[in-house]
Length: 144
Image 1 (cartoon, rainbow, N blue to C red):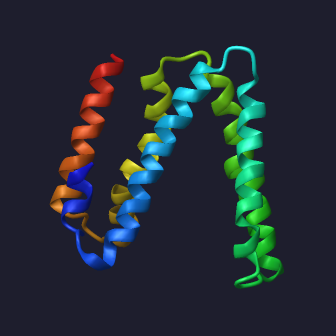
Image 2: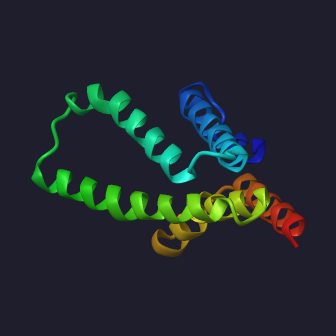
Image 3: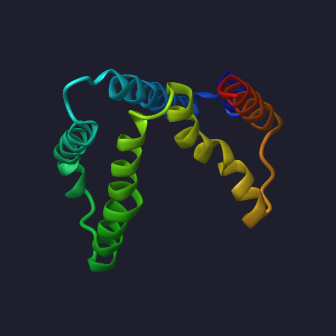
């Protein structure tokens, strides 16, 4: 993980880097706790987590009121990109190993530098590339 941030470490980036690290820790915690649920429904727990997130986010809504197109885009993303995928993901978590459960959502941010390079030509930093390869190599070798 350090390799992803080492090229961008600086006082101006420290808050973003800290939030990124917390995001990774939170995702790992989510998978662990979804696997530990014995009696409850993972779908219900995920729904509750999203409701809590919505409530916490309400004050930020009023900082810049979105227009109709923004609201429509948020609804589409919330229903399809997050909502439906969360349902399938939480149902699958009970059926697969923890490493498989984390590998799927981890691939997306790891492949982001590749997609950015492919579509914009922006070359990722050497350390980001090495860090991504290390994570992909070890997680895929553990799951085999």
